[in-house]
Amino acid sequence: MDITEFKKNWAADNNGAPLNSEQVKIYTSVIPSDRQLKQYENPFYCFFHFGMNTSTGREWGTSGETPQDFKIKSVNTDQWARVVKELGAGGIILTCKHHDGFCLWPSKYTDFSVKNTEFGGDIVKMLSDSCKKFGLKFGIYLSPWDMHEKTYATPEYDDYFCNQLTELLTNYGEIFEVWFDGAKGASAKPFEYDWQRYYDLIRLLQPKANIAICGPDIRWVGNEAGKSRKSEFSVVPKYLADCEKTAKNSQQGVADASRLKRVNSSDEDLGSRKLLESADEICWYPAEVDVSIRKGWFYNKKDNFTVKSVSKLMKIYRESVGNNCFLLLNIPPSDKGVICRKDVRRLKKFSRAIKSITDNPIFEQSFGMLDESNPVPVFNFSGPQKIKHIILEEDLLYSQRVEAFEIYAKKSNGKYKRVFKGTVIGNKKIIKLKNCTTDSVALVIRQSRSNPVIKHIGFYN
Image (tube, rainbow, N blue to C red; front, side, top):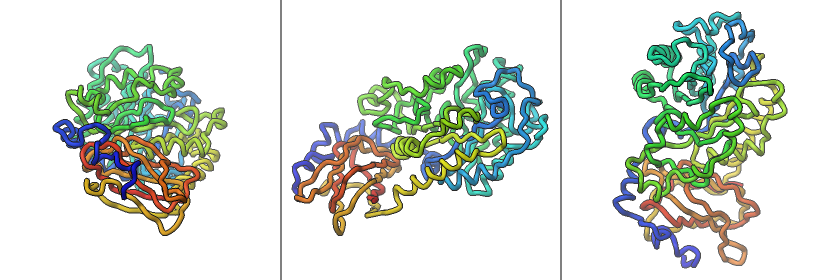
């Protein structure tokens, strides 16, 4: 097919960039670990902020709370898990201990625990059991900063932290993700965590678990607004995995929550060739988008009006799962121990909206490495079809290769018109189209790191 618009492609001039070189070989040699690949099977999962702050109506603790301040009488973790399962998400990460230091399990190493409340039960076990019951993965959040623990900021604190981490990693089955952040109040004592010791312990006790944010497996997208970059690379400089850099950019106070909803444009490029050329080492370090369904991370009745709309949630979904990221959506249970009705209703509509993307397939095809003799795949349909979504996936076993691509649709006069222009694809790219009816679509990859390897493409009405 000799079409002028298609002549400049990856196999012809590759947009002026080397198609194959020693540097390109280095880039394409970087692929996900087995644990990272496993997480890509369902890149959408949920965060549950629940604990002392749920009872007191705060976002952060004050360091003055006592076990008696936890006044929650009942917790229905089966309802939590059922809502997540019906949503179509793959797992739950629980705030087992937030910054206030209050533990949702009967830790042997502190009295500041649910064991000394009127409730008395082990909420971590309850939720891990509910996840097993509903076929969900279970993950843990354990705040490194602890307002309550007297040994904080001393060498003994690392022992305390590892003891609690060991309890969580050995008593609740398989853990799919361990989530650390660097949040620390301005008045907190200076203290450098022994991150490597924490990582080694996780690798020993839960070798299949990804360590996220302040960790080597999954990076923070850089904001809490549900936004990702135009080009969200997974192959990035290894120095980005420096947890201390993440800690400096993390929340340093309650008021910082609004700041983190603004994207810093200076961090827009994390994986271009130009940036990678100056890096001593590179690694596979995919982004995770963490965002709350509400204004706050913990439930507060006054925030009921802030529950995000379905259109906003869908935009976040396309910006994350549909843009080569993991999505961690926070759904905070209420002080009644359940997810409130308004959130549940919104999540049901959100679930239907996600499913509607692929409900009406027009054409789907799985293939592999593109051939230089036929570099532009053209997909012909039996007749004119209205296309609302296109989903592209790269085969990550060959790394992330596509750097620029375009979608062309044939018009009624036989000519092709560009309907989308993008950069990277990665694990999944969800493209939303308007007013596109055609019987033929071409995928024109303009720039790639060696031959593109397209795992799957789908067209949906």
